[in-house]
Length: 271
Image (cartoon, rainbow, N blue to C red; front, side, top):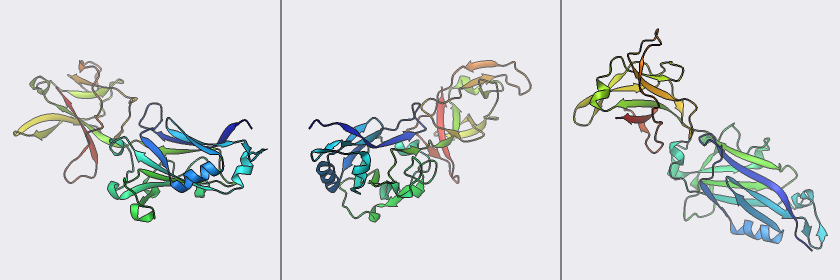
């Protein structure tokens, strides 16, 4: 009979850091037992950019079957995700405290609408220690996904990661920038959300001006706000001179933490 495949379930991975919301920094593997179950029941795991499908052949054993027929078999599928994005934990919120000893664990036993985790976004509540799993790993997985194929299986699930927020610190490096009169970091609405500069110490016993955001700002591949460096700035006046019209955004490969502080900082050096 002609094979006609239909969707049994779709699993998406999203991340608020990316402008298109798609997280694809992983590869997918199936366990031997899952691979055997897929073959024996004419199921296919088909990856796509940011997730995967489980497809079923509508023709099976010489007869036509439906999605409901497949779910009556009550199979359990086990998937292993291997992280391929080395900067993932830099831009991701609520990352595990011990990354090298932790594995994200997602399953549909919670029976939540369209989700494989309890909260709006993935958090430390969705992590298990390596010792939780009975199988031996040659490479520590990024995540495990267990799907129970039963009547409760939904058509689609989305695993949602949230972007980390850091305090942005613009550090003025050149002598010219140090000599600016009443400098300020402002947004496109002329609002000063970075306050007055403070002195920071650099190697070589050098002190320079730096501006730190009043609140932690969410990291994004395409931030919604743009910032400018201005001088002769006064809060009550719209008269000032823009020195740098568009300041760079944080480099996600560099995130620091100040002594005696639990906050994360993104240092941005301006020359």
